[in-house]
Each structure stands twice: as structure tokens, then as C-alpha cells.
Length: 396
Ligand code: GAF
View 1 (cartoon, helix red, strand yellow):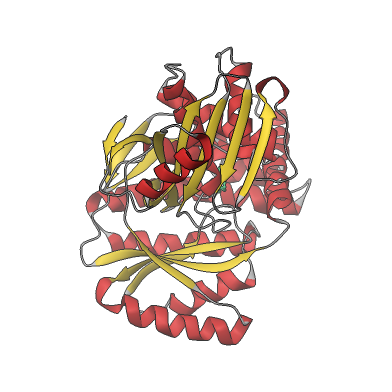
View 2 (cartoon, rainbow, N blue to C red):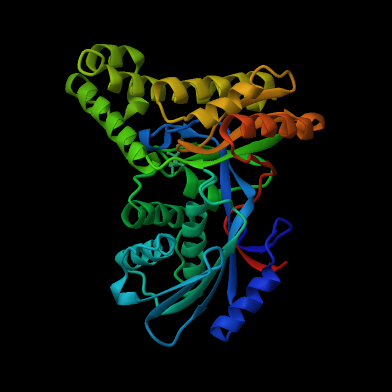
């Protein structure tokens, strides 16, 4: 890991964070940055032992942390202007929500036998919340790494991501896969990560977009069913695997499943489960082709696959929403847009678009006007660059 980052991607006022920390807690903090993520392609495949292709971005969570003499945990979140205090021996999910991504990590570390002491923590950042850019994973990974550094725990890099993921399961109640936390920890500037979520082997793929850039269009909606629907999709996939396994015992996940197996074992039992599993099997296969296209520099073909992914997520997997579909439909036939799709868990958040640089301003203007007219909502747009993963900040 690029663990002592002298970062050119630090965007938040770190000097301000340091001062605020000192005002609040009376000492200087150790500073950690952990990025949000995008995903080029491979959606809802991580918890099915498939592949994903995320990248860390230049929007990140920043944490200041210091030791305390007692066993108390004192937290402050800049975005919410809220504090939270709890004893290390009594960590439990809080109704406030935001502390859970921090406390869940401390809890997981303790459960794995790491010894922590009381700590002060201040959190700030510029990953838009609820935008599907994994601000929660960034908080978890920043916390895991900050505690690792503060208490000299020597946690392996992959374990940081796994601990962060488990924190999300237990303290936030979302049975997420490993993609977001892995991308936050392992991100590399100018690269996407091709991750095999079964073996956890990965490869950095150069992300050379030439005249194009990655543009995120934020719907500014997060429909409330997103967490429950996410967990439901995961169960539907597991149900599909269980039915296939009755006939093919060697199968352990949708990664091992073919369309023919689904037709034989799942379709007769439950058409809806069949359609959900069919999407995942197709998406895992599509990602293989997408990775080849990216390696060949064939962005045109990659972009077309992104549109296919969107249609599958929308029509078959049913995790899109009218706002996301609108944004993709508005750009899908433009010749300066290579690809577009909803990104992440779904039901809101951002679309990811590969857009010719010269046309980005015009596109934002037109689509924003249409979006406002259709939904009465403001559209936010971010041109994102890739960035390195979780790291300590020593200069900024
Ligand atoms: C969310 C989850 F956290 C990821 O693990 C992944 O499943 C994604 O949705 C869908 O691809 O971001």
C-alpha cells in the first residue's frame, strides 16, 4: 500500500480538519484518507463470486484520529455536526446511523482479537453521501486503517477490506459484497481493478480514456427500498444456487452456473429468481469481454457493454429507477457518449458515463435541464479521476 501518501488528490481542507481536531480534542491527529469508488462494469457480481472492475476516485473520506487515556470512543462528524460517545467495551449500532460505519469496524477488530484503546476521531470528506460512490465503505476503510496505524496492529491489507465489509454487514445491516471496500483500499491512480471476488486475485488495468472522461450524473435520489432490495437480491441468487446444487452438487455460486443449468433447475421453480440469476450469469460473462476490450483499448465496444449492463440491471435485475433510466436514455444515442449505465447497488445514486471531453459541459447543461423538467430535481455532475487507495496523509 502507498501507506505514507504525499497526496496530490487531497481535496478536502486537511489543515482545517487538523485545526478543528485540535480544538475539539486538544492534540494533533494522525490523518488518513480513503477514497470513494466507481465501477466500470460488473454489477451485483461480487457477492456471487464473480468479477468486478472498480476504481478508486479523487473523492475521499478524511479521518483524524488520536489515542485517549481512557476506554472511551469519541466521534465527531463534520457533515452532521454531531458527536457520539461510547465505551469501547459497549460498542453497539446507533440510531444516528453515521457512527455505525466507524464503531462496526472497531467492533470487528476487537472480535478478531486486536487490542484497541480509547480514541478520538473526526470525520470529514467530499464523497457525496447516498450517491452510490461508497462513502460508507470509504469511512469503514479509513477507520480500519486509522486504527491499524494508531495501535500498530499490522493488519494485512486484504483483511482491512474484509473487516470493513463485515462491519457493514453487522452494524449497517447490508449484506454487501467486497467490491467497495476492496476498491477503497487497493485503488491505484489511472487504473481500474479487475478483481476476482472468489479467489480475491486482482489485476490493475490501465484506464487510458484518451479524449474521453468519466462523468458521473447524480440523480440525488436514494429510494428507501435500496437496502432491503439489495439483501433480497442476494437471497434470490442464493436460492437459485441452492436449486442448481440439488442437481449439480459441485456448484457453489452463480460463478459456477451456466444459463443451461438455470433453465433446467431454476426456471421451472420460480421465473423471477431465474431472471435475477440469469442477469448475474450474463454480467459475469460480459465483464470478461469488457476486460478484453479495455486491454485492447476498444472503448467503443466497452461502452456498448455498459449499456447492456444497464438494461439488464433495469429490466431483469430490477434495481434501477425512473431517474436512473431517464439519465441513461438521454445519452445512449449520443455519438460523443461511448457508454452509460447506473452504477452500484441501485435505486438511486449515479450513472457512470464515458463522454468525449469537449462535449461534457454541453451534455451536463442539456441533461440537467431535462432532468429538472421531468422530476423537479437538481442534477449534480462530477468529472472524476481515478486515485490511489487508503493511505496516511503526511503532507498536503
Ligand atoms: C453495493 C455493494 F456494496 C457492493 O458490494 C456491490 O454488490 C454493488 O452494490 C453492486 O454491484 O455497492
